[in-house]
Structures are given as C-alpha cells and as structure tokens.
Length: 248
Image (cartoon, rainbow, N blue to C red; front, side):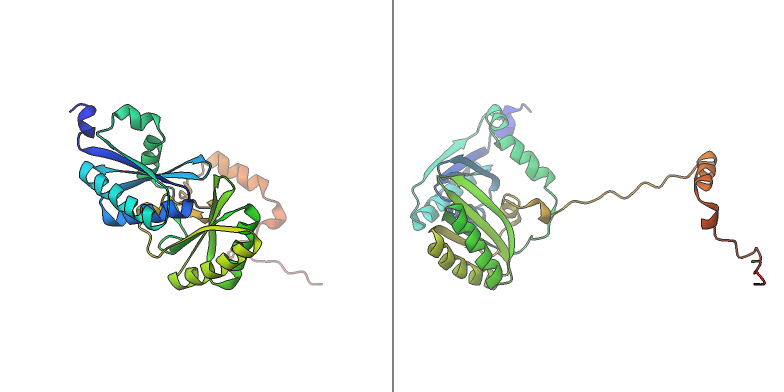
C-alpha cells in the first residue's frame, strides 16, 4: 500500500471564528455530533482561532455542518473548509502532523481531567485577572490556564463541577464587565477526552509518570568505599556484641 492510499478516505475540516471560548464550544459540538478527531487549534492573531478536525470524509462533512450551525448560534462570523484526501505533505508541513503525534503519545495525566470546563474571555488582561480572582473566591473551582489570541482578547479557563463552574462564571462575568470588556463565555459540562487533551493547561496540573529507580547490586569494592565513608561514631553496635557500660 502506498503512502497516498492511506489518505484515500480521510479528510481535514477547518473552521475559524473570532473567540477562543466560541471555538472550544464549537469543537465540543463537532466531537459529540460526529466521529472525528480534534487535532487542535491554530491561533493566527487578531482574535482568529481555527479548530482542525480529521476523520472520514462523511464524518468531517457532518462535523463542519454541525460546527457552522453552532457558530451561527453564537453570532460568530466564520470561515470553513473541507479538504478531502489531503496529500501527506500537507499534514506533514502544517502543524497538523506534530499535533497528531502529540495526541498519540499524550501529554501526561491531568489532575483536572473529567471536570467541567469554564471559559471567560475579556478584552484586556486586567479584566481577565480580576474575573479569575472573583471566580476563585466565589466557588470551588480551579484555575487551569489562560489563553491569548491577539486583539487584546484573553481567556481564563477554570475547572470544577458543573454547578461550581456555573456559579463562578456568573460572578466572573459581572467582575469582567465592571473592570473592562467581557467578550464571550462558555461552559462545557462534560468535555470528551479528545477536547480535554487540546485545551491549554498549566504545567503544574500535569502529572508526569516517574520511572522507578533501578536498584543495582553493590560490588564488593564499592561496599568497602561506602563503609570507609561512614564515621565510626555513626556505626551502631550489633546486637550480638555486648555493650560495655561505664561505671561512672
């Protein structure tokens, strides 16, 4: 089988909007409505975010149709394209190839997996920080990460139970509007693993599996060096050796 034959029944779907919470909500809708894989997001500045999906041609067509309808519900201006049977070189040169490899290997276990996701986007960094602080104080949620997409737009991402995330977002919206400009908000109650793996996540929440230490037998000459390096007063007498007590 040639390399080109591997791409006969596959397609790429790309859909772009002007908000990070909106593109995450659109990606969630596409994943739950079709059998595609979410490769990730491409952010080119000026607030433009593109979700990239990959799968069978029919599934990608369905995903883009679902995503388009969702974007219109959000009131987003969008652009989209379906590339049937992409040439292997296209995926290799674009960020798509690297991200597919990352999806295959995974990024480590996240301590925040299987929790609802809340995204709050502001125009201006102070408004985002103020909203994040208010949300953390108002509900039992965790600050997972933040994302910048240009044009002054930045998104704070929180995780927790659906109820706590909903309460936090309500408080955060009010605080963001008080400080600056609230741009968009999104709540994803049950994110799929595919979506979870593509969301920004601070390194402190990634649990890396540590290899077990390799215990090697100590050679005789190495054991002698260890014994010589231990101070004599630190050597505890053996139980079989009688301890001489001082008469004083």
